[in-house]
Length: 50
Image 1 (cartoon, rainbow, N blue to C red):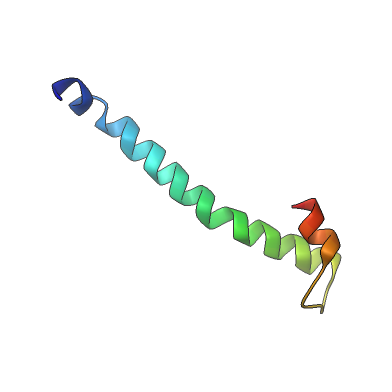
Image 2 (cartoon, one colour; image 1 turned 180 degrees about the horizontal axis):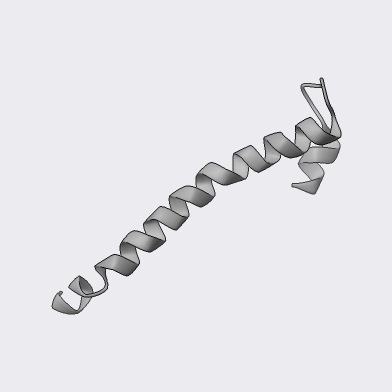
């Protein structure tokens, strides 16, 4: 267990990066949909590209 204690900063970094990825992916889809199909609720092209 002491070997893992020295790696705790890496675990925190990976956790923060994972949370950031989970937050960023839905917003990328929303931006793509707004750019390709403005004013529409559904856009199969944006879903296909993302």
